[in-house]
Image (cartoon, rainbow, N blue to C red; front, side):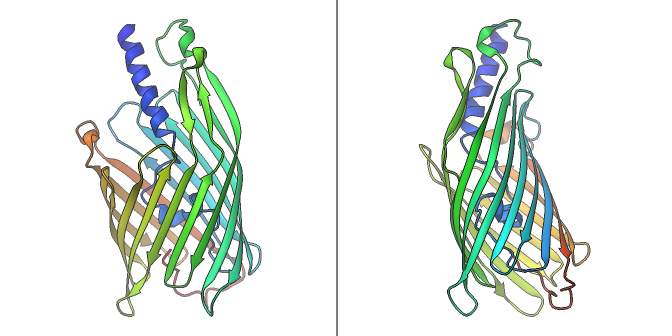
Length: 303
C-alpha cells in the first residue's frame, strides 16, 4: 500500500506541474484560437470546424490524452467568434474539461494589414477521481471537483503572408486540493507570443517558418520553432522543435479543397525519452463555404 501511495503522490506532483499550463499541442497552427482569442480567419462566409486528438507519451502509465473540438465563425467583416471544447485526461485520476467562446474584432492598420483584439470567456472544470486506485479509505485521497471561470485576452496582427500575436488564454489563477490541503492541481496565468511568415517559393510551393514562446508564472520560458512546406495547396510537410523536450515531424493532406487531415509525431529529447514511445497527434479540418465563395477562395491561407 505504501508503494502505491508513493507512486500516486509522485504522479500527482507531475500532474500539478503539468496542469500549470494549457494543454500541449504540436499542430497548434491549425487552431491558433486555442492560445490566442484574437485569431481570425478574416474570410466572411467561410466557417472552419475541426477536431484534434493527442496521445502524449505513449507507453507511460497515466500519460495525458487531449481531445479538442473547435470552430471559427465570422459574423461579419469585422467580428468573428471562436468556439473551443477541450477534454484533458491524465490517467484515471484527473479529468479536465474546458469550454470557451472567443470574440475577436478587426481593424485595418494598412492596405492589407489587420489588427484584431480578442477576449475569451469560458468555464474550466477539473475533477479528481481516486475510485480506480487501491487506496481503501485513505482520507488524503478523496474525490474532489471544482468549476471556475476562465478569462483570456489577446491581440493578433496579420497580413496574407505573416502574423504576430500576443495573448494570455487564462488570466485568472485557480487550483484544486485534496483533503488536508494537499494541492494537486494548479493553473497559473500563461502568456504566449506567436509569429509566422509565408514565403512563396514559386506558384506551387509555400514555406512557412513559425515560432511560439510560452511563459507561465513561476516557470521558465519555453518555445517551439517549426518549418512547414505546402505544395500545390494540398500536401504539407514540416518539422518542429520544442525546447528541451521534443522533436516532431508533421504531415498534412487536403483530401478535398475543403477537407484536410494532419498528423504529427513527437520524439522526446528530455529524460522522459527512456520511458515512452513518443506522442501522436491527429487533426481533422473542414471549411464550410456557406456563401458560395469557392470561385474566389481558391488557395487556403497558410495559417
